[in-house]
Structures are given as C-alpha cells and as structure tokens.
Image (cartoon, rainbow, N blue to C red; front, top):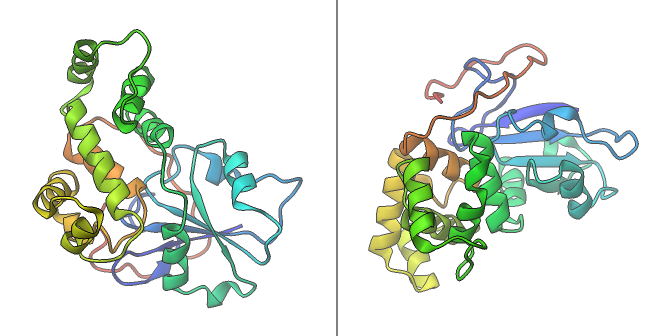
Length: 249
C-alpha cells in the first residue's frame, strides 16, 4: 500500500505528513492498493487514531472490491470513497475529490461514532444519535435528561449538534456557494452561513469546496474546546517532500 495526502488548497500530494504525524483539516488521505491478501485492508486504514479527520480515498487498479465490502471490512472505523484507476499517477485531484463527494452521506451512527471515538466519551453515543435522527429519542431518556447529558459532555447543546448535522448534510456533496446551496435546499442562507462560521471558524469559506464530513466534525470539536483522544503518529514512508508554506494543523 502507498499513502499520500492531498493538500486542500495547493493540490500538492505528499507523504509523510509535514508536522509531527498530523495533517491540516481539509486534507484527503489517499491509499493505493496493489493487491489484497485474503480480503484484508492494510491496518492503517482500520486504525481509529490514524488521521481520522482526513476523508479517505481508496484507489484500486480494477473493480474487484466493492464499496460495500470495503466499508464492511473497516467495520465503521472509516468511510472511504473508491476510485478505480489503473494508472495511479493519472488520478487527478479532481478525481479524488469526486470520489469523496459521491460517498453515501454519513448516517446518525457514523457521526456519533466519530465524535465518541475522538472524545473518548462512548456514553453519549445514544443521545448524539438522537440529535442526528429527527424524531428519535433514546429509550428511557427524557428531553431533560438529554439536555443534562450534553451539559456534562461539553459546550454544545442538542440544538448545536442538530445544527452541525444540518450543515454537514447540506454541504457535503455540492461544490457551490453556501448561500446558493441554502436556497436550493430551502434553508435560510443566513442560518447556514452562521452555522458554518460557528463550527468551522475561518474554514467556513471552504464548507462546500473541501469535500468530506470528517474535517467538519473535527473542526467543530476543536472549536468547541472538546479534549480529543491522541492520534497515532504516521510512520514515514519514503523521503519527505517540501512542505507547502501554509500547512498547519
């Protein structure tokens, strides 16, 4: 397997990460597989601590592995986009980003699992799923209990988590201006813009141009001041390439 990182602004593809095993938000992790041994994916892709905020594009030389079987092998630890490209070097940044955009939108469980893995608070997964699934309430949990659990968890309320979910689902698949997207979806552009700035900070301008929901959830957790579980440092593969000047975590 060969790994590369696709920079969100310069289209530079490089490995290893430039800063102590990290990669800036918006970066896409690209994994090229030459062969699969007994249907097993490389361990790095199944490691929940391995650059979890980087959307992952898996490049295969043919269509021998379906998207469904790939996600099943990963057991929910990472949602990948598949790109069939016989010649690895011919996979363009546009191709890679398209593979991420055309993934199935994340469901409530996928989002909740990411948040609980990154924060180390598995006990809130039921109430998070409740926020991400309209009309659902965890068995035996009242609205007041839900609010209390979120107060104990951190800065965001149930209303905030619902707003983040709305922003992710609205912006994940369409590379257009956020205001235009809001009109197309029947949403208030001011609300969507405000949510983007609140959760994504100075990356709000990239809400639709950078594909992937992972970096948006990660940005919201960092902005909200949630302590995050330490990630595993990436093992260098080959000689580091020259860093783009803006690359900060």
